[in-house]
Image (tube, helix red, strand yellow):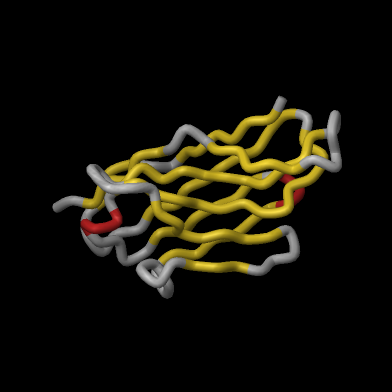
Length: 122
């Protein structure tokens, strides 16, 4: 049994900053990658950023230079630093992770958190 729990969402003004956290817990054997997606009101879920266990990162063009993903492997936690926020960044932000459990360490699958709401408004 494994799960992901996001935290840190809230209301900020345009140009402001926010830091999101996502902690994986449970019977984890390995985590090969963790990342963030978001879903704005009335829109489909979109990719934001990912980081692998070796430190490789990818960012959506819309957030490059503004958002930073980081990962603490020892804590099974991923963070997302959101800077220079724009109203268009308003969305529910979902954490995801590709993980294998101790019970089945050779089978990795993608898990999702339930999301945390980020609202940018003046």
